[in-house]
Length: 182
Image (cartoon, rainbow, N blue to C red; front, side):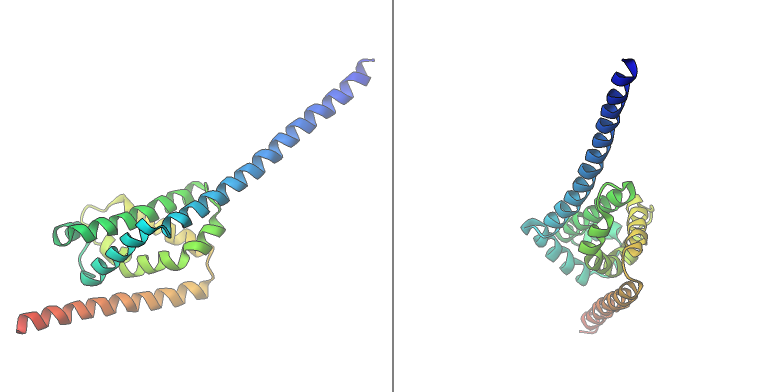
């Protein structure tokens, strides 16, 4: 009688555990996907598009100034630059902790991230005197994004956006030179 009772009980317990594990797996997978989509919604929100535009103009106007100095030159633009930086920092923290769907996030953000990385973060954040923790997080995000990006895309975008940065710097220096001569 005990064996007849034990086997169905054991089967029920194993079924419940398997069901719980599978449910947890699918919920975790869904939550990771949802978080990546929420980041994408935030990136494309009206408020963030305003900050991206302000930050773009600030970076274009002052391409060779590091982030320490930027606040003294353009406070409004620097706030937007820092909002963009913090966004990618949070994305990087989520990549590191594996709390979002990395493949989906990389697909959604790799081109935007590489633009900001090569046009701004790589130079203006790298040269900050006190070595902000932000730089380490951004560098790690670049490394992790590369795992989910085709090498050809990475090489093409790094070349394209580095040239864009150099173009901004040369325009800025030419503009400064023209003002000095006038």
